Image (tube, rainbow, N blue to C red; front, side):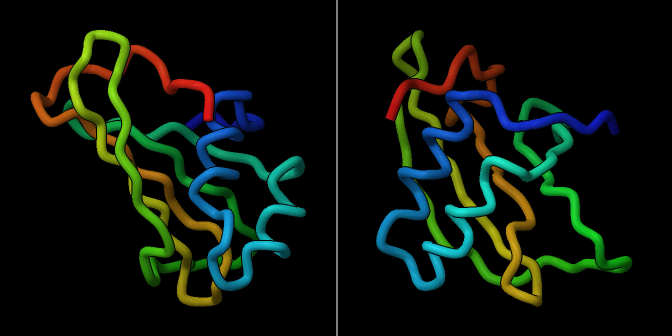
Length: 106
């Protein structure tokens, strides 16, 4: 997987999802430095956050939201931490399993 920085719409979505959550201040302060890799499993999309710890594992879901894609189809998004409380994965998928066109401004 190719790693990259967050795109502006992804950053806005993450800020929206983290706002008011436990430990959000620390996680928000790190967003400008995080590196992600795009996930694609079928039509489900998302981002995996790069971490320095080998053997990282999925922990808890910290936030979820929903929004409409530009074609009017509902998109669900969930943000997960790893077992150490670091950003692990942002999953998003459309209810009709079609590809997501864009993440709106939050």
